[in-house]
Image (cartoon, rainbow, N blue to C red; front, side):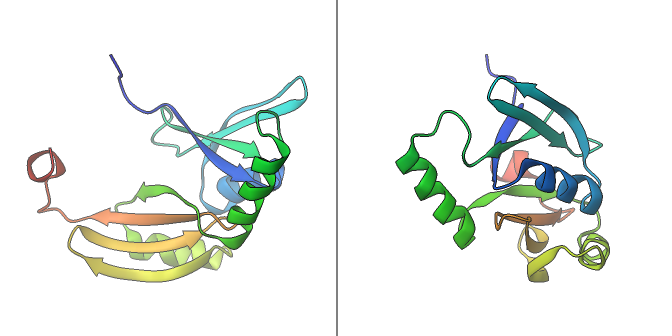
Length: 144
């Protein structure tokens, strides 16, 4: 039986630079950073959610044929890949703090039916939602 999500992929042009982005700008923690043959395995996660990791995968690493690697590089560079939604209890406060650290936001915090949301990009161009859920919205009841 599936218990939940453990690791998800974030594509990066430079693993060490992206690791610094997540740890220095978003306060994430490094969970793994080790050499594995021809590849380097790097994962990070939010401090309060160590059970879910982002694997920072190189766009020229193993497992991608040259044609697929080139297509993926173009999509990441274009900034069209959404890599996920991060929950916060203070969207506006995090927006101000992260923006001051140099995080590029493509949408300022806005009221949505589900809460307050801002959208930012990482150092590669992948975009993320930063969402503060509305207290009156119960996802298990309303969408479960």
